Length: 451
Image (cartoon, helix red, strand yellow):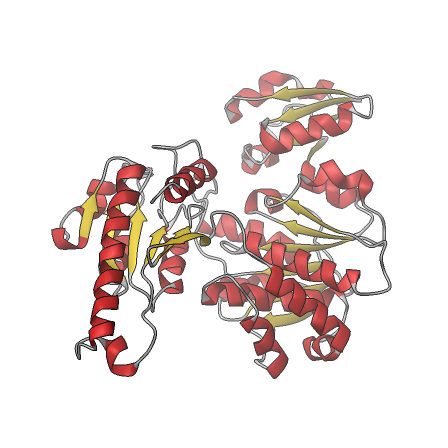
């Protein structure tokens, strides 16, 4: 076959490697505008793969497709050819953590059961490109697929178990509008059959709207807080109520995979012990409120995956009972900064905000200079945060030891809440870094070199 791939990157490269290894010719077209596509003479190719970087609106416009009708995507090809059942997860935030929790817990259950040959494959944005492991997947395996709106946009099949997390505004620089974004997400449930299952978040109207499109068996979370559910939630090692929410979604998804209800799943002692082991051992994902180290009474966390306000809002809430020095700011994408400014300068747990990146002056404009510091480099920001946080800890410890009445910890005998240095930018990284991973790696390197 003669195959064209529109867009390089991780997916495009994976598609090329997969088909080249099977003896096919693959041509990758990269670094182009959508308007360039008709000049590629795609009618000469047997298959045309769209990468997420290509606007699906363009693909679906018959006037722009040229004479080629054999368009697909890596996700569509995977769904057409995968032998195993698929658990698909979408949402605006939390997809990676929820997918990883499902994978970790489900593999523990399988390892403790009579199915030693079964394997859980984590694919999509968080895991291996799906096509790279397609030929390794057997009928008895299970696939956990993190699904972005770009992968779902023109999908004509839905997973056997669909999980719909909270859905809010995102990627509006690529989608025509919010409705287009929501319609893309809806494909995770729209094509399900009566034999399938859909888990959705009952407190989010958009998630409910998407979940109701499913023809399958529906279940919702938050789930009932039974004794065993609470015990699992208390085993979670990563901070934040949002992560407990993600775990509840994972529990509901696993119950759906086994075609049972949550209580029946958890009442099996062997399954429950395996689930506890999986939850306890789960350390979270890199750069998602990731604990880096503790030094001189201060805990450092890396939340550099946060490239938009909702993620930073969640990170701030995760430490609402601790004094926090926040490092934030980044690429100016022309977004309305009013909501993030309101959150930054009203949050009681934020003792100082250290602003970096292109948005630093915009975030500081009109605010009380006592509440923020502006720094030009990440290293300067971390050093300033260290000094401020260590002073908070020293003052709290001194007041506690002397039982000074004005100190709440001294009054109650409660252990001093350790200060947190949290880097959660709430902005894209491209002004100072290659990507969010580069930003996170540099932050961790600086923190780990502190003395």
